[in-house]
Image 1 (cartoon, rainbow, N blue to C red):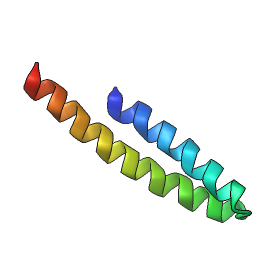
Image 2 (image 1 turned 180 degrees about the horizontal axis):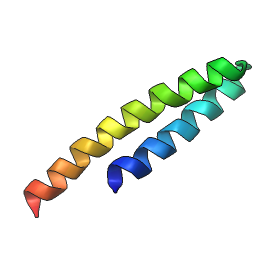
Image 3 (image 1 turned 90 degrees about the vertical axis):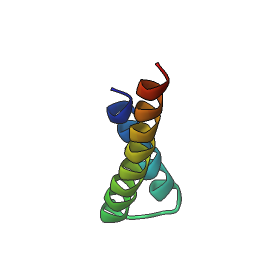
Image 4 (image 1 turned 60 degrees about the horizontal axis):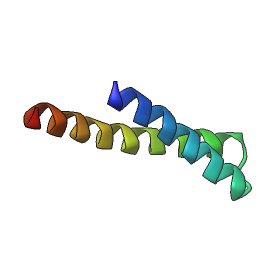
Length: 54
């Protein structure tokens, strides 16, 4: 659950950053995907840490 939420938040943040920089539609899509993947990986590590601790 944490992975999905963070991936969606990352995608939104990436899309917003590209739009602020004046990127076109493909730039916004690329930023959104990259940020989504990075945030998803962070969420994966957080999930593993939570499962190990609890």
